[in-house]
Structures are given as C-alpha cells and as structure tokens.
Length: 165
Image 1 (cartoon, one colour):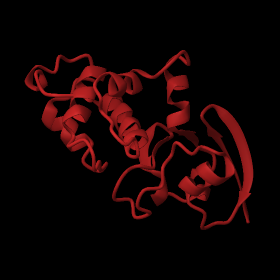
Image 2 (cartoon, one colour):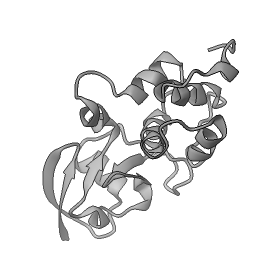
Image 3 (cartoon, one colour):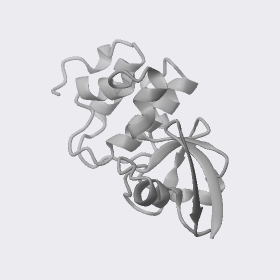
C-alpha cells in the first residue's frame, strides 16, 4: 500500500492505495465520485475525463499514486470551480443545446469542453471538433455537442442554426 494525499473537488483526502489502482477507480470506489464514468478502460472513449492540476486527463490512464499531491476536479466539483451556485456554464450549455442523449459520455465531454475553453475561449468549429476528438459519443452525432461548446463560449452558432435538436 502507498499513502497518497490529494485535493478532490476542493476537499483534502488522504488514503492508502494499491500502487496499481487507477485514478478512476479511486475516485469512484473510494470517494463515491460516480460521475466519473468508466467507459472503455483503454483511454479511448474519454468518459472518465477529469482535471488534474488544471489539465484534462483520462483518469483510466493515470494511477492514483501519480495524483499524489495534486488537485483533481471531477464533474461533481466542476460547478464549484465556477461559482458553486448552480451549473457550470458548460453544463448549462449542454443542457440548453441538447448536447447529450443517453448521458454516458457527458461528464467526460463536459470536462474536456471546460478545459478546451480554458485554453481557447473562442474556438472555431474545427478547433472544437479537434479539441473533443479524444472523447467519443455513440448517440448524438456530435452536432449538438459542438453547438453546446459554441454556446458555452458565447459564440453564436450561426452555421448550426435551424438544425433539429
């Protein structure tokens, strides 16, 4: 066992973990952060995306011991990083623009979008698609996800208006 200490969604935690335990397992099984979804276990789908020290990472590709001393933000803590009162603007945009269907990929998409907009506040449609390419969705066809990212960035989605939601 290895002792780790980290901050998750603003709360300090310390725990003994197996050195091979994945961050996604630690978040879900030890801390109850079930919004961080296990999708593929191979880092292909992005459903497990969290922010590690402000950087978007696939938590199925990070060992819990690698997060020692770090700050982790999950989908459950995202609103708190904004203002703690209601949904984060990205979460609200996904809701407003119907950027989800079954919801399985949504936490990872939202976390990746928040990181993308932090890095590039006004991305073009191509930049949005490139920025989200490591996150897969089987339901939406991505149209409304792109629309949601544009909405969250404050950009009019003129090229997507008139499409069915």
